[in-house]
Image (tube, rainbow, N blue to C red):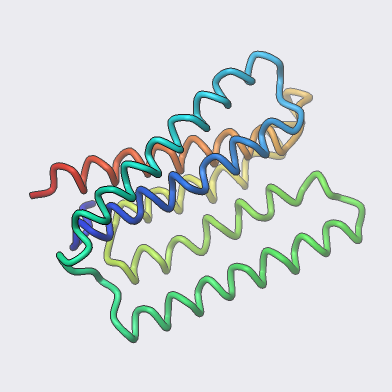
Length: 178
């Protein structure tokens, strides 16, 4: 479950800490009123994880990374496919007047794209994050409908929480990995 390189764990913490607040923010589109404070707390803690991850990445910057020319190229392709798939799906949902499903689609694409990313950076814990984000996307619409809340609230809160947990785990790996 541990990364081959502490720098990669630290950068993962920073990246997950960077994106988690976006998901907590998306969840605030129309959440149940009791969710507001936990969503705000998740956002604040995510920013702290981002900062801690960035500091640890700086500390371990010269300690090695899984990225080389081939890995970097493959990573760029994976991210390019992710952005393309997210954009095409979002456009399709918008045209079909199902805008409420856009965050669900984006979460699904993010979750699926993390599987090859985990393999590229040789960090098995990212597979767990990938599986949980993908699962959050798959179950968010039925859960939202069963509770009469918006899909954005469900998928945003779940994806934000998974990314925050991944950030915290990665911080622990980076801080105590030696």
